[in-house]
Length: 627
Image (tube, rainbow, N blue to C red; front, side, top):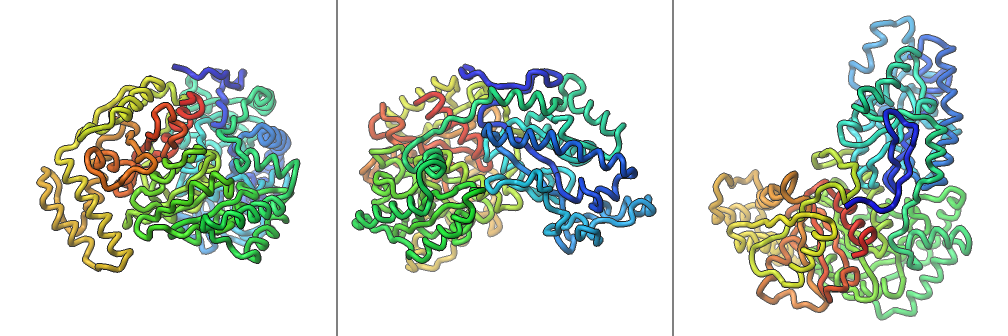
């Protein structure tokens, strides 16, 4: 199975045409800072010749044209800046001192010293910022890095994969240093990379020349080489990604509305009026003073709108104020919240009506016990997706079974918000396996299905249909002592529920150790330093990976289903609702998307850190294949 839509490509790239797959290309502009391209900056002390240093600026013109065309074509744009914190804790002594000690007559100033544009390569200084000709827009990501390579001690990998990027067009300075280092780092991680020769420059013409040749040497051992003209020509055929959803509060529709019809303030106020007419929903609107302050701040950004400009959202559950503020900083408007109908599960029966009446574009929720997946599967009038990302940093704590959840009809909004939340974390918590640049249909995906217990016949049929559509083999996964797994998970959740309700304060660790001793599984050591959740997570993760299963499928409870019934419930809940214990990321495909199977919907789960591959898979199912 191969993609049916013809993709654009840079035909004359070396050693062969460089593919530009729709929605998967990023223009990465490396370190076009004043410190590197303007006299008096750090670069001017690195380059031995003023004439050679002046020629580096010749790359600005072609790069500016590439940037403008990329923005028009919908290509993702990412800027990087090299620099260090004020007291240089992230600058190793070797980087700080080596050149100055080798050639003090040339390197009269080094990192951290005061220059004409402030302290050299120090974040926040005038010289550290990107030049005006290439100034980033508010909806473009700027990655601050402490090293030559963009992947070193940053979350660049997570940002790229969260954005769905597989192909990188590299530009910037310097060719032989930061561009080359990033190029090789990306190559090792599985990205396809092409450098535009006239959009980069270096401080030694000979080294620069052979560095450029090395990019495409050995028949593409490392990657590709091209130029700005050929890239711009290829963008005329670039397929701008087709929106997954075009409802009245979709990202695509709101962008069009704000460009041609009305301003965010008027539109949001109309939503507030509509919300007041549905007071039975129990939506607690924020004060008009608070909302007006958000709208007034947004009005000043009209000429350069941020990523979620004027997108209304609500919250439910115990959502971090940091996450809410970050969404607001991205231009989203926090209009209110829904109280928890159940303080233990966080379930709110009115969320379906919020989407039915178009009162918000997305919901940020706290997922207790998989409740957001159950809610998403219960909507009958619209396709509503529930995404629970891998636990990481500020998003949620692995000490708890409560995770962040993003709920929306629009997958593009889910992805936009997730990418920006990833930017809050300075480091990823999980390994960074090489990405697969190929189309999802060509990757050889294996789909895992739990075989323990009784499975609903419709769910088995649905799983087989998905495997057929994606040409994917079905991998059966069995677990010994299944009842022990389920009862152990219940213990973890029940303890958290007791804590939330202030009914009991028993030691979580003590109960884990006591209970886990009954497992009698060879090789499992029980101690105060190893939690039950970690052991269970390891057991499940062992079932995922190369030559095993890339994803697990689990049915989600249909609308009105009694959660306390017996039968095949333990298998259903193991991934779709109890997967929080295993730190899986997951996304629920709503009932209406899979309408051929009645009220049955499905959860796709992937191992921690593989959110991007799971989102690609789900997008292929619901859009490319129209399941």
